[in-house]
Image (cartoon, rainbow, N blue to C red; front, side, top):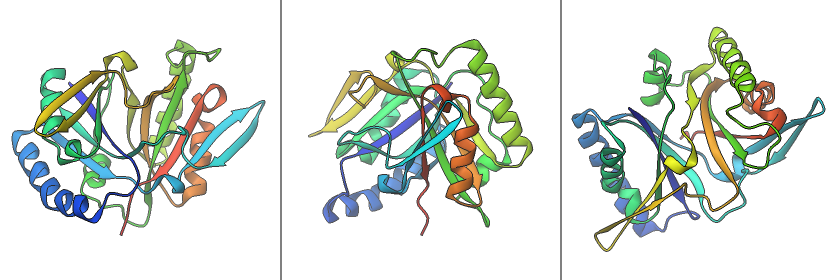
Length: 241
């Protein structure tokens, strides 16, 4: 079963923490790829590079910055293939980021497919384009739930069109937030709590990674997604040197 690890941070890590992460993260990646549980992962650019997209009454509304106004923000993700949630939590607890930050573990719904585009993305081979993460934010108060069948069907049509245009890297809906586990390791003790990392009414319901010429094209793709008409989509570039 495939799981997503959201790495959450509170601001820029200190120089001391960065030294540890730069030393230990490659070792974790090598170990987990050797076990066959890590499929890929990438670091995101800072939250101020994000845009939040909504479509209301046919009008596209774009605001700068991430969707969630919280101290913690998504700094990157890793995609895992694990036997069960217990193994995914164990892998998350070994991630060096869990020693200083927070890691959310969430299963994908069935249907996530990984092709050659995803493999190239995982290796950082972006070519002339730049990858962007589209984060689908939703909440319980929306008039149209994320898992409404008509919306899901329209979302699949959107995804097939993006794939046909050669812009799709990977994407799928996530299981409900009550399946999430939040992992921290403090003083050698693993602390696991139920639920997602953001303590808000809204939650991340799915993701798509798209390969675009620029930020504006990524925003246009987000606006074309049916979720943007009822909820919000955060658009964030991945980090590049």
